[in-house]
Image (tube, helix red, strand yellow):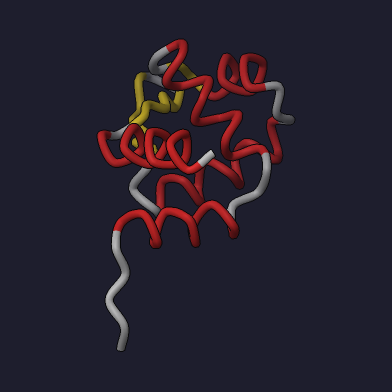
Length: 91
C-alpha cells in the first residue's frame, strides 16, 4: 500500500467533493460558524444540497456540526482550515 501525504490526500478529496463544498467551506472561514439556513444563503447552496455536502465534509473531519436548540450549527475544524490552505497553495 502506498503512503499518501496530506497534500495528496487533500487533492484526492478535492476531486471527489461536489463543487458546492468549496463554497460552503469558504463561507465558514469567511463568516465563522453559522446555522444551516444562514450557511445555505451565504454559500448560495440549496438547502437539500447543503445537507448532503455538510454530511460529506463532516465525515471527512473538515466541518463540525453541533446542536443549539433546534438548530444545527456548522463550523470549520482545524483540518478544514488546513485543507483550504493547501488547496489555495495548489492553485
